Structure formats: C-alpha cells, structure tokens
Length: 544
Image 1: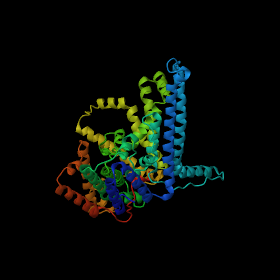
Image 2 (image 1 turned 90 degrees about the horizontal axis):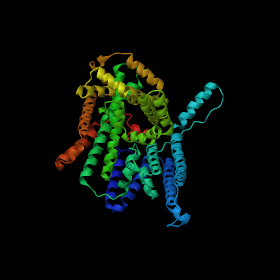
Image 3 (image 1 turned 45 degrees about the horizontal axis):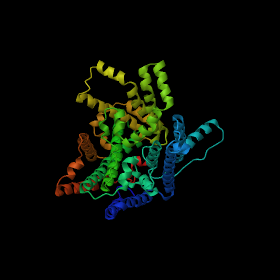
Image 4 (image 1 turned 135 degrees about the horizontal axis):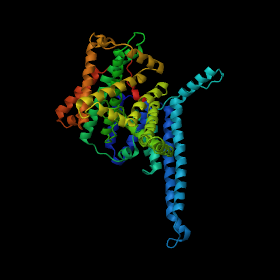
C-alpha cells in the first residue's frame, strides 16, 4: 500500500475518522489495528514473523531487566533487616553494596546482549547474508577448494533496519535505567510498528513517542491543517521533483558508457541525483510527519535543510537526524568512552602529544561510526567505500580542527562573511556530489569508471548547446525542474529562519487555504511523473 496510492489515502481517512470517534482511552488500539493492517497490506505475510520476534524479545527482555533491577534494589534495601532487624541490624558495607549492584548489572547485561544478538542477528542475516556468502564463495573459488556456501536469499520485512534500531535503542535505554520497561505487550507492538514511520523512519525514541501514542488526543483543527499541508508538500516533492530528476539521472548513469557521457554531464547527473534523493527521502518524511500530525502525534524532525550545511559533519547533523543521533548515543559514545579508548587516550597524551591524545580517540570512534553508516546503506562493497569516504571528511574535521583554523588565519579568511559561508556550502555540496556516485551506480568498478570519465573531460559547453535536454526530458521539463529546485531552496531558507510555510498558510482564511489545497492537488496530478518505470511503492530509503 504505497503512500501515494488511492488505497492509502482511503485507509488514512478511515483510520482518522474511527480514531477521533472512539473514546480517547481506546485511540491507541485503533492505531495498533491500523498499523497491523498497513503492515500486512504493504509488506508480506511471511515476513511478519520477524517483527513478532522483535516485539516479543524486546518486550520480555526489557521486563526481565526491570525485574532484575527491582530485585537488586530490594536486596540493597532489605539486607539490613535480614541481618538483624530494622532497628539494630548491621548495615551493608560499601563493598557489599558494590558487589550486589555489580551482580545485578551483570545479569542485566547478559539479557541485553542476548536480545541484541537475536535482533541484530536477524538484521545481519537477512540483509547481509547473501553478500557475505557470495564474497566467501569468491575467495573459495580463487583458492580452488571446491567448497561452496549456499546462497542466502530472504524476503526482507518492511522497515527492517528502522524498527530494529528503534526497539534496540529502547532496550538499551531500559538497561541504562533511563526509564522502566513497558508493561503492555500490545503497546510495545504499537511502538514497534506505528504505521506512518515503519516504512522509512524516523528512528523514534521511546520517551518521545510512547506517551503520545498511548494518551488520548482531541481533534485540533490547526494541527490537522498543518499535517495535510505537509503531506501535500511531500507528495509534491516526491512526484513532481524526485521522479522528474530520476528520469535524467537514470538516463545518464545507466548508459554513460554506451553513449560516452563524461565531464560535466556526469557531474550534473550526480547533482540531480542529490536532488532526487533529498526530494524522495524528505518528501517521504513529509508524508510521514503530516499523517502523524493528523493523529495528534508529533515525531522528531529527520531533516533540517541539509544542503545549507557548511561542512560534512554539519550535513550529517541535518540529514537523517534520527540515524545520526542513534549512532551517536548507542555506538559513538560507548566506543569513545570505553576502557580501551580511555587507555589509548592516556597513552597517547603521555607518549605522543597531549592535544593529539585528546582528539585521536574521538577521531577513531567517529571514523568507525561512519563506516557503519555506510554499511547500513546496503550490502555492497561500494557502501563500505561510501562509509570510508564520509568518515574521512567527518573525522579529519575533528583531528585537524586547529591546523585548519591556523590556515584560515594565515589566508586572512573572514569567517563571518556571506561569501565565505556560500563557499563552504558549495564546497560541501561538491564533496557530497562526488560521494553520490557510489550510491547511483550498481558497483564499485562502475563508480571508478564514472569518476574517471567525469574528471578526464572538460565540457562546459553542455550548459549552452542544449545537450542537457537529451537525457529523457525536454527543455520545458528541465526548466520546470530547475524552478522547482529553487522553490524548495526558498522554502528551506524560510524554515532555516525558524518559520514554516505550511504554518503561515494554515493560519490564513478558509478560501485561501482551500485554494492552496486544490492548487497543490492539481499540480501533483498534472505535473507528477507517472511514465514508464514509475513505481508508486518505490522510495529510495525504503530499501534500507
């Protein structure tokens, strides 16, 4: 059930009507039934077992850790009475208290590790099993051993990475004592499968989302208006911009070797792929957030004007924010603050240089995180390279922060000028565009050939001779795409200043609002790209 199919629109309308008709205490039940229905309609019945395993293991694992913690607390409070009565019993020594706490923490850790292994094991086997077996078979073939591993091909459940990261984040938070475990299995199932965000995120946090899911909501006209406008904006970006850019991108990169595309032609294709990716993913997020707002539930933002970033690290603070925050809280900090890294930092400070010892462990932890981010994007060696590419720029910003600052002072760069800020944004966009080659072509060898073709030819005349209109769209559609890109940029500028265009429109009088609604719907129907190759269920990030 694709987001922009009539079936989804009808499903959403029926769900909203029932949601606001029933008593508030039963609204979460309607959300649960809606989520289950959507998952079955959009996914595959055979893959539901994996989601059920995640719900059950997460729920009972968290409850068990809660039980262990309560047992530990009871021992600490009751031991004095057990030793000699409430009045005159001997108090526990500091060492005894430490031992009781240590024993409880070890038990909780065993439970945590077991549940993490089960769920990340499912993720790794389903998503990367075939990739690993194929590469091992390649090595065995070269060694001529005659042995061969079976190829592993599985149906991937809908939203596998997103719901796994979401539930495992919840489990880790319970282990850390951030909050108590959820006591209702069905509510845990709703948190895992909440239908607006199951397809492509965001990766929600329990303390942000759970209370909103379970508490009653009254119909709020303003919130409903803003949700509807945001959904329309998402459809607009996906169907009119992303799908139009995709035609050009596919034509350039699918046949660049046959038609000898090179130089700026390929670079423009990569730039437009960045546009396509943003309009596709951010457009999908707008639909997710808009639908959720209609139910009175506000999700954490997943994008914050990413192409206005002035560095690669800032870009990743603005792009897929929920993934970046998840990696920071559950991967980066545990690595950077671990005992081995503390020992490394101490040794480097003593034996190499105090400043180097201070920044190198953070550099290394950041590098490891971004390699994982690359691998998260897909089971292919090109994504390993993508992770290494991004990790290099993000990590070296920390490692060489002071030398970079000294170089700017030497060159007398005024960092507060608009010209310098624009240069930083253009530099960041260029670095990102080169990285997009990894994503847009099928394998690493093709990536290298495309990059070689780009930098081995200088052909700026393509911007003037009309050849840009020979890649699947005519001059009219190409011009429309450029105007729409400027429109999105203008909206991002407004959002960057702390306002929202949809908020401004939602506060206008009824005739103006309905003019905007109808104009947006007409534009989507008339100018949306529904030609050959269009797949209404296709979102780029849904595959992750």
